[in-house]
View 1 (tube, one colour):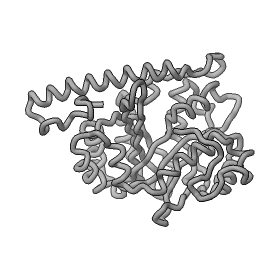
View 2 (cartoon, one colour; view 1 turned 30 degrees about the vertical axis):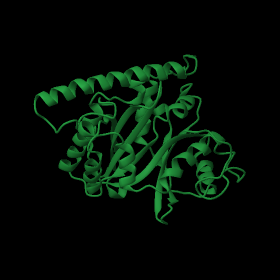
View 3 (cartoon, helix red, strand yellow; view 1 turned 180 degrees about the vertical axis):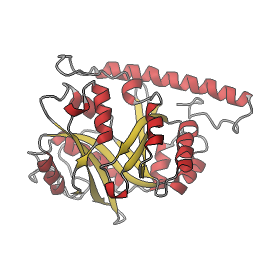
View 4 (cartoon, one colour; view 1 turned 45 degrees about the vertical axis):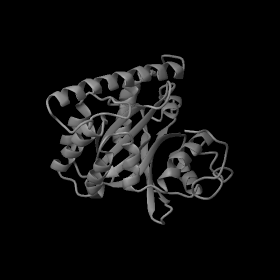
Length: 319
């Protein structure tokens, strides 16, 4: 993400100087802006086209996934001191937040990532509506972690630096186990995503039976020593915890594992994140993924699976 000064936000107004500074700091305001800006003009096909860039047969995959899924939201995690004040600040930025509900899934992810008990983290979420270029509503899902003395040192800085919870999401309007499992297989084996956890939150859209989500992640070489992260959520209403638990229990290739991110522990006094070391580690991890993909592609061709080159990335290897 390019860091800019105050600037003009995606809602057509200046994002600062409107009474929001006391509840949302400038870093998070710019991060919210960066998430909202592309969302205003995206549609389902456009999102999938960007996510599947460089994959052979991408057009066919886009058409197939778009047959079952629709663009739902973009999301990110911010840190706040007071939830009510943060909601008021969001409204002053020109987006309309919904009432907060507990975030079960992201709280569990943070708990595991930083080695603290879930009850030491107060994480909530809001679905904030945003007007798109076409006049329709778009949704920004904003997770808020409250700053408390129990918060692990380095959590806020690390989450901001690596955007570990930032993603785009598609929704499956008519979920059933066969379609869900089919999408899991398609995204993992043909679209080159890795499983990145998920879960079931009974508090989110409780009237619809709660919300089940699956996360997917691609790490793609993006120039010398650089990595582009493409993270996708597939969500559907109802309790599909049997499927989400299987997805979650599968060894993940999440960014914090593949990039070997430091995991600060509460009260251990560890120094901050060494960003350069993280990038170097991540680059080697992606090269290893590409090499594994080339080996798998060779085996598939020997076995006569797939049509020529359907498992290769832009550089001739799976990324």
